[in-house]
View 1 (cartoon, rainbow, N blue to C red):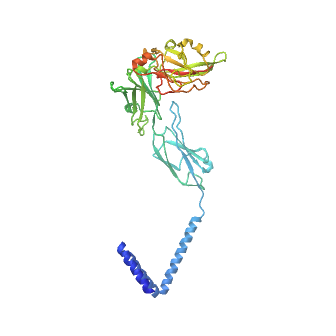
View 2 (view 1 turned 180 degrees about the vertical axis):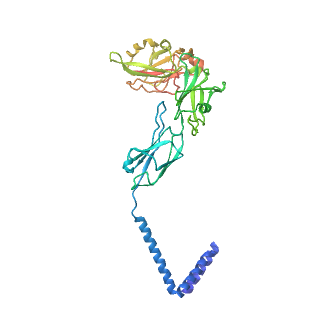
Amino acid sequence: MARFFAALFAFLGRVLVASLGRWDPPGWPRWLGRQGRRAGGWALAHKRKSGLVLAAVAVVGAGGGYGWHWWKTRPKPTTVSFRVFEPGLTAIGDKVTPRSLVVRFSASVAPLRAVGTVVRKGISVDPKLDGTWKWSSDRELELRPREDWPVGQTFSVRFERKGLAASHVTLDKYGFEFSTPPFTVQLREAEFYQDPVDPNLKKVVSEWSFSHPVDGPSFEKSIAMRFVPTNKEERDFPLAAHVTYDKWKARAFVHSDPFALPQKDAVVELRAGPGSKAARGGPAFTTRLESNVRVPGVYNFFRVNSARVEIVDNPRLEPEQILVMQLSAAATEKEITKAFELWLLPTQNPHDSRAGIRRPSKPWARAIRASSWSRIWGSCPRSRPMAVTMSSCSRSRTASRYPAPVCRSSAATACPCSAKPPTGKGTRACPRCASCARRRRQSCSWFPWGGTRPFCPTAATIACST
């Protein structure tokens, strides 16, 4: 049997060597084996000494384990923690007081005699700061500087172990760091502006705010404006920026040079690069701010942004419907009355060819001037669709006459109390847009019930209700 197993192991060894190769172990296992044999031989030759060595090792191990257990379970002293509330931004004005740095402890730490008094020793600040430490309560310590905090600076505070807190109090740490607010710049608003007195004065104005009074030259150096038209025939060009400030230089107002309206919409790129600084010094603002201001073109400067029907109470507290339109520029009531018309639309699509649908004989009602709108509201059926159109041109209150063809500027809306208009496919051509469509070489149609043709880009479709 022994020969059989020996032959089997020899065969398996030859198979493993042939498949995996011969493995030669490193030298360190052999060295460890030799040293172990030597130690065993020495222990057998010196039984008494080997027994003393084993006993010493056991004693050292037991003592180390007991010492570790004692260290982990020893009584620990009670420590007091604290939170630091960094000072916020100081309000900008004539007579302002800097906000205090507050250190709030988790337990009573101040000596009873020191509560409400100024602390004269036991605290050091690096870098040095001219200010006063005071115990505002037995748990709260505050630092109030004589002048405003430096801009964006980090301070290190150290507490002495004796002399500041009561003798029986132990703090969990005796120092901390805090930082003052950095200087920041914010773009509050940027818009296209037309002077209400001089209609030729068109420019871009923007308002900027600062966390601290700004250093004017550094901010003005970082401002850049550029006029970028969408029309390829026009060229882009830089715009000079004129900056004014409020009394405390906490806000800046940037005005561009006046420019003429482009043929098509354009964009004024407004940028404020890094480098602006506070008047009191400190690190500069490192973030780049950018904004694009849309400038309307000549042919869409004056337009209807929205049109909606609202129900309001008249002087007799009776509900009435009114049409509210939002214009892109101011216009006189006289010009508005001449330029807008109201159309009563059919309830069904006259171009719907489905069977069973009766086509109205008069799909379009006659035009009603804005001065006669009140006649329509009292007579139209509930949820009857209506349309508001703009005539060939309109005069802005502060500018000259701007071209505004029929079906040019509008928005669709519905009466708040009206039912949904009937659904269906198909559209019908706008009878007031014929000349406009021919001039622009494109179709112009309405689809108050949906459809596939494009919506008329100049009319406002509303739903009337009684």
